[in-house]
Length: 207
Image 1 (cartoon, rainbow, N blue to C red):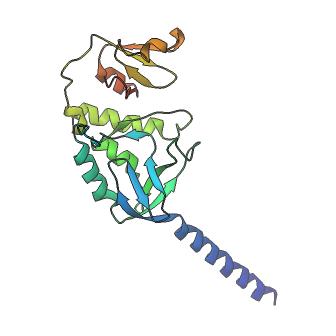
Image 2 (image 1 turned 90 degrees about the horizontal axis):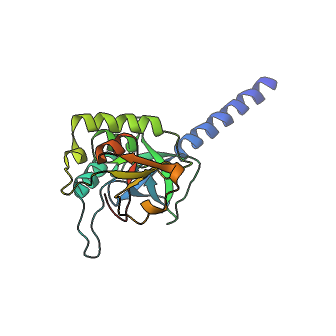
Image 3 (image 1 turned 60 degrees about the vertical axis):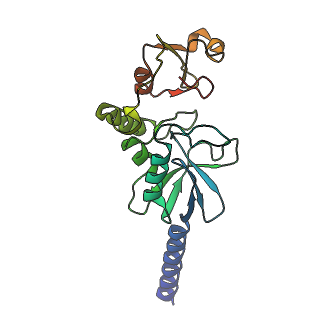
């Protein structure tokens, strides 16, 4: 009887483990752009730690390689099963789920987008779980000058101002740059240097 009960418990545990494993994976239903997808729960998922070129809406021009980034994302996750891994924050201010997205073969989609030059690192405290890994892949892509790293700024500034608290960098004339506390100011001679250190461009002044 004891042995029978033990076998029953083991079988139950295996069923639970199997269910838990399968429940962790979700079917991708739609790919919005290079860093946002819709999964079968109805959740809109925003890839953590990265940012891809914006596709233009409402008359705005699409950024360099925006459609290429979306197409590559579709190749990776279109109709695929994915697993979500979270950091300290699970939602952004738009209500989107924030996650590191993994394919069934274990590949992290966030990292793949950066490694192939379709995205840059986007750091935001307190979500730093894979900061070192993502930055290493970005530096590799920058060295190779692939993807977005082929883009050359038409009107470079003499220098750029970054914030060590927000990990954003700005044009010297940007109003947000003027609000950075002196002890958080980081000065960069080029955009390349700012990206190399893991800083992201301000959305307002778009350096």
